Image (cartoon, helix red, strand yellow):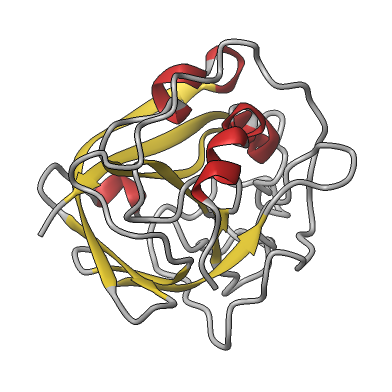
Length: 229
């Protein structure tokens, strides 16, 4: 299924709250110990469509500075729109089907399930990978019970590493890691992460900064990648 670029650009204001919303979706270990920082969780089976529910969400309003002037449709270094189907990161061996998750009726973000083997998700309010702008993929760093989540190994990625996204039109988009940043959730740089870009870019987002005293993750970890070849 091919998505609407215009509709996704209009959804970037809602997208701006994604990291805050995603904060509540990372589960600490049941035993209170530090979460597992290694290992890969993979998924199997087809990726559900945009109507598929997620297990956890929180409500918030969208910051007013979350948008930029949309990139023109003819922006360089971009492809035609096609929804993503799966993700492969050669450097870590991470493979995942991609859920298609959007916003609930109350405006809260649907986030991926937390169970062992749960896949990552593409936020349907963001551009499809390969379109101009920042495509956003969300995944958990750990699973319920303290096992590794699909994005457990994001910290192993370094500049120059490849990220491959297979799309429903049969094409594969290759992105190259540019950098990665850890952000305190209470001071998340909305515009830097979610603002429109002229070329096609990718953001991989998970939780970080686990606090064993509270059992919560205080930070987000964001990998920035640009269109490669």
